[in-house]
Image (cartoon, rainbow, N blue to C red; front, side, top):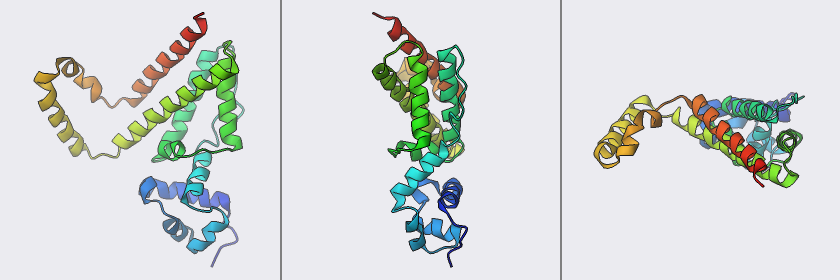
Length: 212
Protein backbone atom coordinates (compact mmCIF):
# COMPACT_ATOMS: atom_id res chain seq x y z
CA UNK A 1 0.00 0.00 0.00
CA UNK A 2 1.29 3.42 -0.92
CA UNK A 3 2.44 5.44 2.06
CA UNK A 4 1.10 8.96 2.40
CA UNK A 5 4.63 10.02 3.32
CA UNK A 6 6.04 9.12 -0.09
CA UNK A 7 6.64 12.34 -1.99
CA UNK A 8 9.01 13.48 -4.73
CA UNK A 9 11.81 14.25 -2.27
CA UNK A 10 11.47 10.84 -0.60
CA UNK A 11 11.70 9.20 -4.00
CA UNK A 12 14.82 11.15 -4.99
CA UNK A 13 16.66 10.54 -1.73
CA UNK A 14 15.85 6.84 -1.88
CA UNK A 15 16.98 6.73 -5.50
CA UNK A 16 20.30 8.33 -4.55
CA UNK A 17 20.75 5.79 -1.75
CA UNK A 18 20.01 2.99 -4.19
CA UNK A 19 22.49 4.51 -6.64
CA UNK A 20 25.29 3.87 -4.13
CA UNK A 21 24.52 0.16 -4.23
CA UNK A 22 23.43 -0.41 -7.81
CA UNK A 23 25.16 2.26 -9.88
CA UNK A 24 23.39 4.08 -12.70
CA UNK A 25 22.98 0.95 -14.85
CA UNK A 26 21.54 -1.12 -12.02
CA UNK A 27 19.07 1.51 -10.87
CA UNK A 28 15.59 0.60 -12.12
CA UNK A 29 12.11 1.87 -11.41
CA UNK A 30 11.17 -1.55 -10.03
CA UNK A 31 14.11 -1.67 -7.61
CA UNK A 32 13.31 1.86 -6.50
CA UNK A 33 9.67 0.95 -5.91
CA UNK A 34 10.75 -2.06 -3.85
CA UNK A 35 13.04 0.14 -1.76
CA UNK A 36 10.13 2.52 -1.14
CA UNK A 37 7.74 -0.39 -0.44
CA UNK A 38 5.32 0.75 -3.09
CA UNK A 39 4.13 -0.58 -6.44
CA UNK A 40 6.22 0.41 -9.45
CA UNK A 41 3.19 2.06 -11.04
CA UNK A 42 2.99 4.48 -8.10
CA UNK A 43 6.33 6.00 -9.09
CA UNK A 44 4.79 7.39 -12.24
CA UNK A 45 2.87 9.90 -10.12
CA UNK A 46 6.25 11.52 -9.57
CA UNK A 47 8.37 10.57 -12.60
CA UNK A 48 7.26 9.52 -16.07
CA UNK A 49 10.23 7.20 -16.66
CA UNK A 50 13.81 6.51 -15.64
CA UNK A 51 15.14 9.49 -17.61
CA UNK A 52 12.95 11.98 -15.74
CA UNK A 53 13.98 10.27 -12.51
CA UNK A 54 17.65 10.71 -13.45
CA UNK A 55 16.99 14.38 -14.17
CA UNK A 56 15.44 14.77 -10.73
CA UNK A 57 18.42 13.03 -9.16
CA UNK A 58 20.83 15.30 -11.03
CA UNK A 59 19.02 18.33 -9.70
CA UNK A 60 19.07 16.91 -6.18
CA UNK A 61 22.82 16.22 -6.37
CA UNK A 62 23.62 19.90 -6.99
CA UNK A 63 20.89 21.34 -4.77
CA UNK A 64 23.37 22.72 -2.22
CA UNK A 65 25.89 24.15 -4.69
CA UNK A 66 26.26 27.95 -4.96
CA UNK A 67 23.58 28.58 -2.35
CA UNK A 68 24.13 32.09 -0.96
CA UNK A 69 27.45 32.19 -2.79
CA UNK A 70 29.85 34.75 -1.35
CA UNK A 71 31.50 36.90 -4.00
CA UNK A 72 34.93 38.27 -3.14
CA UNK A 73 37.00 40.72 -5.14
CA UNK A 74 38.95 37.87 -6.77
CA UNK A 75 36.96 36.28 -9.60
CA UNK A 76 39.62 33.62 -10.22
CA UNK A 77 39.63 32.43 -6.61
CA UNK A 78 35.83 32.48 -6.55
CA UNK A 79 35.64 30.48 -9.77
CA UNK A 80 38.02 27.84 -8.42
CA UNK A 81 36.01 27.66 -5.20
CA UNK A 82 32.75 27.13 -7.06
CA UNK A 83 34.33 24.55 -9.37
CA UNK A 84 35.62 22.65 -6.33
CA UNK A 85 32.20 22.84 -4.68
CA UNK A 86 30.56 21.40 -7.78
CA UNK A 87 33.16 18.62 -8.01
CA UNK A 88 32.55 17.68 -4.38
CA UNK A 89 28.81 17.50 -5.00
CA UNK A 90 29.29 15.06 -7.89
CA UNK A 91 31.72 12.92 -5.90
CA UNK A 92 29.34 12.55 -2.96
CA UNK A 93 27.32 10.01 -4.93
CA UNK A 94 28.39 6.97 -6.90
CA UNK A 95 28.12 7.83 -10.61
CA UNK A 96 27.09 11.34 -9.57
CA UNK A 97 28.86 12.98 -12.50
CA UNK A 98 27.40 10.47 -14.97
CA UNK A 99 23.93 11.14 -13.63
CA UNK A 100 24.35 14.87 -14.18
CA UNK A 101 26.11 14.53 -17.54
CA UNK A 102 23.25 12.54 -19.00
CA UNK A 103 20.66 15.24 -18.42
CA UNK A 104 19.50 18.62 -19.64
CA UNK A 105 17.87 19.92 -16.49
CA UNK A 106 16.05 23.24 -16.31
CA UNK A 107 15.63 23.94 -12.61
CA UNK A 108 16.29 26.62 -10.02
CA UNK A 109 19.35 24.75 -8.76
CA UNK A 110 20.97 24.29 -12.16
CA UNK A 111 20.12 27.82 -13.29
CA UNK A 112 21.52 29.26 -10.04
CA UNK A 113 24.83 27.47 -10.58
CA UNK A 114 24.97 28.48 -14.23
CA UNK A 115 24.21 32.10 -13.44
CA UNK A 116 26.85 32.17 -10.70
CA UNK A 117 29.48 30.77 -13.06
CA UNK A 118 28.66 33.31 -15.76
CA UNK A 119 28.55 36.15 -13.24
CA UNK A 120 31.96 35.26 -11.84
CA UNK A 121 33.59 35.17 -15.26
CA UNK A 122 31.89 38.39 -16.34
CA UNK A 123 33.48 40.07 -13.32
CA UNK A 124 36.76 39.65 -15.19
CA UNK A 125 35.44 41.86 -17.97
CA UNK A 126 34.31 39.04 -20.26
CA UNK A 127 31.18 39.44 -22.34
CA UNK A 128 28.16 37.34 -21.43
CA UNK A 129 28.69 35.20 -24.54
CA UNK A 130 32.35 34.52 -23.77
CA UNK A 131 31.57 33.89 -20.10
CA UNK A 132 28.91 31.37 -21.08
CA UNK A 133 31.31 29.48 -23.35
CA UNK A 134 33.97 29.49 -20.66
CA UNK A 135 31.52 28.25 -18.04
CA UNK A 136 30.51 25.32 -20.26
CA UNK A 137 34.17 24.46 -20.85
CA UNK A 138 34.72 24.46 -17.10
CA UNK A 139 31.67 22.29 -16.47
CA UNK A 140 32.80 19.73 -19.06
CA UNK A 141 36.21 19.61 -17.38
CA UNK A 142 34.68 19.03 -13.94
CA UNK A 143 32.38 16.31 -15.23
CA UNK A 144 35.20 14.58 -17.10
CA UNK A 145 37.46 14.55 -14.05
CA UNK A 146 34.71 13.19 -11.82
CA UNK A 147 33.54 10.52 -14.28
CA UNK A 148 37.12 9.28 -14.65
CA UNK A 149 37.73 9.23 -10.90
CA UNK A 150 34.47 7.50 -10.08
CA UNK A 151 34.99 4.88 -12.79
CA UNK A 152 38.51 3.97 -11.67
CA UNK A 153 37.60 3.68 -8.00
CA UNK A 154 35.13 0.92 -8.90
CA UNK A 155 37.79 -1.21 -10.61
CA UNK A 156 39.26 -4.01 -8.50
CA UNK A 157 42.85 -3.33 -7.43
CA UNK A 158 44.04 -6.65 -8.87
CA UNK A 159 42.59 -5.76 -12.26
CA UNK A 160 44.31 -2.37 -12.12
CA UNK A 161 47.59 -4.10 -11.38
CA UNK A 162 47.12 -6.38 -14.38
CA UNK A 163 46.45 -3.37 -16.56
CA UNK A 164 49.59 -1.68 -15.33
CA UNK A 165 51.70 -4.75 -16.09
CA UNK A 166 50.23 -4.91 -19.59
CA UNK A 167 50.90 -1.18 -20.01
CA UNK A 168 54.53 -1.56 -18.97
CA UNK A 169 55.15 -4.49 -21.30
CA UNK A 170 53.96 -2.45 -24.27
CA UNK A 171 55.39 0.94 -23.35
CA UNK A 172 58.83 0.18 -21.87
CA UNK A 173 60.73 -0.01 -25.16
CA UNK A 174 58.27 1.32 -27.71
CA UNK A 175 57.13 4.61 -26.16
CA UNK A 176 60.02 6.08 -24.13
CA UNK A 177 58.40 9.42 -23.32
CA UNK A 178 55.29 7.72 -22.00
CA UNK A 179 57.50 5.36 -20.00
CA UNK A 180 59.12 8.35 -18.29
CA UNK A 181 55.78 9.53 -16.92
CA UNK A 182 54.31 6.14 -16.01
CA UNK A 183 54.09 7.01 -12.31
CA UNK A 184 52.08 10.12 -13.11
CA UNK A 185 49.75 8.19 -15.40
CA UNK A 186 49.01 5.63 -12.71
CA UNK A 187 48.91 8.05 -9.77
CA UNK A 188 45.63 8.12 -7.86
CA UNK A 189 45.83 11.71 -6.58
CA UNK A 190 42.73 12.87 -8.39
CA UNK A 191 42.50 16.09 -6.39
CA UNK A 192 45.96 17.07 -7.63
CA UNK A 193 44.96 16.35 -11.22
CA UNK A 194 41.79 18.35 -10.85
CA UNK A 195 43.50 21.33 -9.23
CA UNK A 196 46.24 21.33 -11.87
CA UNK A 197 43.73 21.29 -14.72
CA UNK A 198 41.55 23.89 -13.04
CA UNK A 199 44.52 26.22 -12.65
CA UNK A 200 45.40 25.85 -16.33
CA UNK A 201 41.83 26.57 -17.39
CA UNK A 202 41.46 29.67 -15.26
CA UNK A 203 44.88 30.94 -16.33
CA UNK A 204 43.88 30.31 -19.94
CA UNK A 205 40.63 32.21 -19.46
CA UNK A 206 42.56 35.15 -18.02
CA UNK A 207 45.07 35.08 -20.88
CA UNK A 208 42.29 35.10 -23.47
CA UNK A 209 40.69 38.09 -21.77
CA UNK A 210 44.00 39.97 -21.90
CA UNK A 211 44.59 39.13 -25.58
CA UNK A 212 43.36 41.88 -27.95
